[in-house]
Image 1 (cartoon, helix red, strand yellow):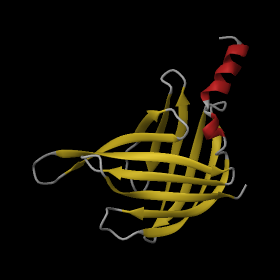
Image 2 (image 1 turned 60 degrees about the vertical axis):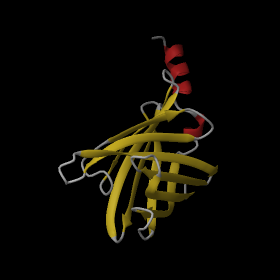
Image 3 (image 1 turned 180 degrees about the horizontal axis):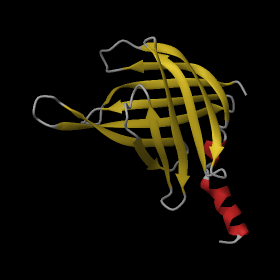
Amino acid sequence: MSNDSSEKMKEEDLHPLLSGLVGEWEGVTTVQFGAESPILTDKTSGTMRLMLDGRFILHEYRGSVDGKPHSGAAIYGYNTATKQFESAWVDSFHNGDGIMFSKGEAGESFSVVGHYSIDLGNGEGEVSYGWRTMIEIVSKDKVIIRMDNLAPDGSKDGGAETTYSRIR
């Protein structure tokens, strides 16, 4: 691959929506484990930086839920071959030791969906849930990351929302 082709590929790989996320952020995260559960709120801080020659953005964050500290990381990207947004997410609170892979159609906003299974514990096997992550860039200094837990029937069943303000 020529150097000109490589440069063109790098410019096209990171969707313009994602490049505006680079920086250091502070904010508040709310978590709700289901429609009937209380809403928990706590402070969160994060850093978003480009990686792999600007093809992806890495979001690392730390905060707490119900007084318990946690941290996590997500890699976001735009796959030019499939024309889809993609992410890989790990988190010490939500995911245990699993990696959630998600993807979604390209559009005016970033939205991806991944899936996970839970064992019902009653001998009937596992049930698949969805996890939708949406990033809304409100302004160059304000970002909202919404994560909806999707029940097997597709309805929203709790989730989390982080509202970030840029500090650098």
